[in-house]
Image 1 (cartoon, rainbow, N blue to C red):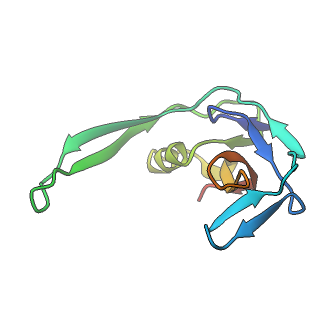
Image 2 (cartoon, rainbow, N blue to C red):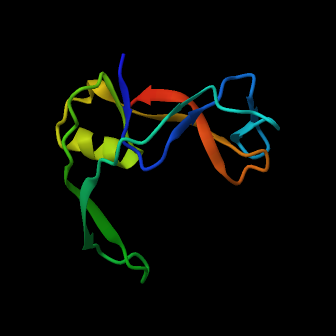
Length: 126
């Protein structure tokens, strides 16, 4: 099975032995010395096309409406395409076939909870 990564960065995957859920910060964190068991380099980036228009103010605060106007087409040659959540939402609204589109699942942070190091896996964008 071919997986292509169309996010702007490599995807690092950590297994359950190297990451644990820290309920106090509600994040998955890598254990000290943890290393990814797999990495998928970026193949480029797929972009969503979004227009911003002024909305009606709420209690004097400006509002803006974001409208999806399209997105880059999916590349051929892979069974799975990992994309950003924003692209996945735009693809769904644009009527693209979602069967190959996945996003990252469960980001894994550094032990201090400040830096994303990778993720635990991928999930279908539905």
